Image 1: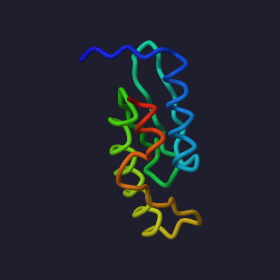
Image 2: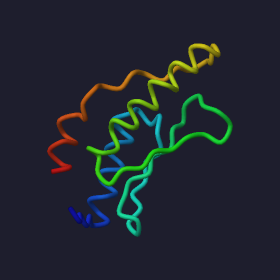
Image 3: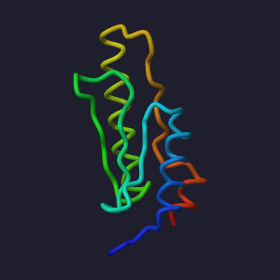
Image 4: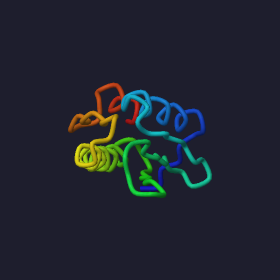
Length: 99
């Protein structure tokens, strides 16, 4: 399926995803590449980690798995801040908005 997302919708998705995860991620819509890019702000190896997806549906499981791993790493290293667990499914508001 060749999905073309307008700039406003892509930016809205990015903003809502960032809010939903309590700003543990910086999420951007890349209009040229027609995808979302999310950078994890939690505990990780030097250089960090990012995930990409064409829609919130595609990106959410990648973010959830990465955040769970970041949480595990933070706990093991006794980091001062530990990211929360993310819910299994994309929240209802984003499901409806993502179409």
